[in-house]
Picture 1 (cartoon, rainbow, N blue to C red):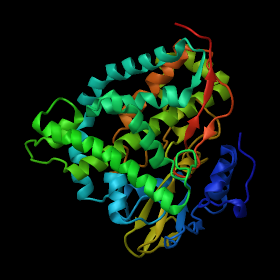
Picture 2 (cartoon, rainbow, N blue to C red):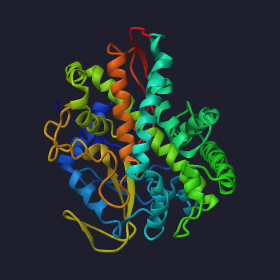
Picture 3 (cartoon, rainbow, N blue to C red):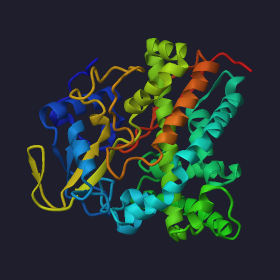
Picture 4 (spheres, one colour):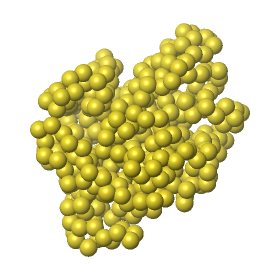
Length: 422
């Protein structure tokens, strides 16, 4: 169903309170933008103690998001990918190569992609299945749990820690610190919602994650193993390795992006199946045949990363019928693109057999397309299959508690019930 209309003057993409509205209303707002003003200008939010930014153009159509993604020379990432402006050192510490342009971005991606080759990911296949089974084993006899904290969050987190060679004893620390970094606007994770409190919480959480992997990197330089950290800090034939600082910031990116994207896709997928029991029956009746298309639909439906920003690099850049100037900010609203009526038939319908499905849930085409997309697809598919096969009557026991954010479409908690089983 097409959601009820939200008028242009009601839409406030820069206001975090706007993002606490029901998701159907947010989708309606984007539908209004696509129809009436698909490249609308928005002022930036005023943030205490920080200079107010110049504002940004919101790209809400699928075609425009794809066009900006394909031309990183015209729409750069190196000036920041969040809407607000931060010091370059802050951007790179928390964003690593996401906040870089070529040639630095190409160098970083070339190094870290060693851990994401088809061969490496193929070796992880059994690990993903084993970890997913282990997680469901732990909750199967209970009859209820918080699906986010006890299931969805644990699978990508454990896979990343195993991939990096980090012991499971650090799991809780990494989980808590990533919640802080991506939940800076949410009082559950950062109780002090002043600018000073938010910045302090972010820096402490980031530094603790960086310290964790930097210490491991130092040890792996002396005694390399077969984990990703060893590959990143040990000289290869081309002599390219990550510095300790680069390793720390890449780990922050990996655990934040890799954990949050998969965990929220799984959580939103469970909610979507509960709201669409016909689609759950279709998937459960043919797990092998439907899983590939169902995973893509879950990612489209959830769109875990709501937006990224780019900055125009020269004057006279044309996007559609709009002319942009050097320094203009454009924000790529992936959630809107993933419900664009020009691309998706009946875009507000959850359809596990949707094909084609040219969603942008892993970003648009170009050098910044998600490096871990293949692994994320694998994790989502394995966990959803595990839940459908072993806990077929699993249902939400109350509404999901959503993250207060315009960047991550997050679910913090989702109580579920099911028939206990061994």
